[in-house]
Image (cartoon, rainbow, N blue to C red):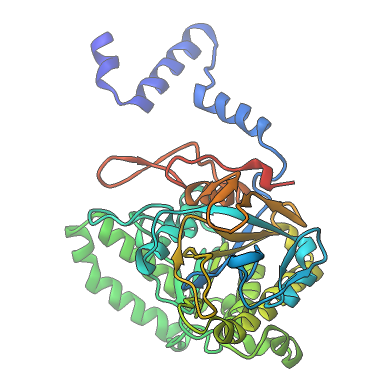
Length: 424
């Protein structure tokens, strides 16, 4: 009996004991994990799972915290002036429209990182892991698919706008990778009908007949992942929800409000997608690497972000979507306080990010930098804790690790804990 029991795998041993107990004594055993999960759910704060979707706005190049969300005086001060906002904190006059919606945002002024080079810093911000040659790490969209499953029967769970789909699924299946949209005005490129239903079914049967032997011979995760990706693509091509990618459904007035540029239209597309069931949308906005001519370059790039961000927050709020949508403003790193009247160098040890909606506190500043904006003075926030906090708001059970192909347990934020003080 003991030899038989030990030869079984873990679920089977549990089932065997349960059946013996039920047969002998009329008892049932509630698994300990189930009891722990129920207890954990009862202890979760109200913000857990409030963010049904996440819009991640990625400012590529490194936003200067001092010239945007954390204005300073003295030698660190740049070309902008500090202005009051609708909340009890200031931003610079590069962000006048942001100032009008500040009472709906949470600014984190105490971000810390340890990478000051663009490409690895982007990877680090998107994944919360330093780049490694032996493994690719998932972004938050892929983690969401792992913990929460699909967010839509036909639409992808994750989309990225204005960039390629790399830095996406990591070690998870390719079906968790974001769908890449190069130009938000064009929507999904090269999507055409495959003909009438009868002709389409005939072509699909022919394709399946050709592929069947190969799938049987090479029945591994890679082939299965490809088949899943192919099935998802076909479902999307047939779906009526494909219109979510078509911005022509928006009024000219609404499109103009977001801004006639790829970032503004990308933010509008993100709103349409999350409204249709996409869980995670990244919109990238480049142009924030101001080593020279900071005043002129900020004068070009900041208004684009400022207009689109304020419009997105207002639009989501008016549609009753802001409470369930977490808008994230992220960047690679900050810029050095040293300002000689021209530009600023990379500065990863102190910078700022933003959360809005999705259970985040409104009109709130978390953390503090020192008077020069050089180091974090209070309540440091690591990239890992930032990710864990967003995953917490999205309802991911991050206490349960995923197992990488090498057998290593891995978690959102590389083991960091969410910062509950960020949430109401």
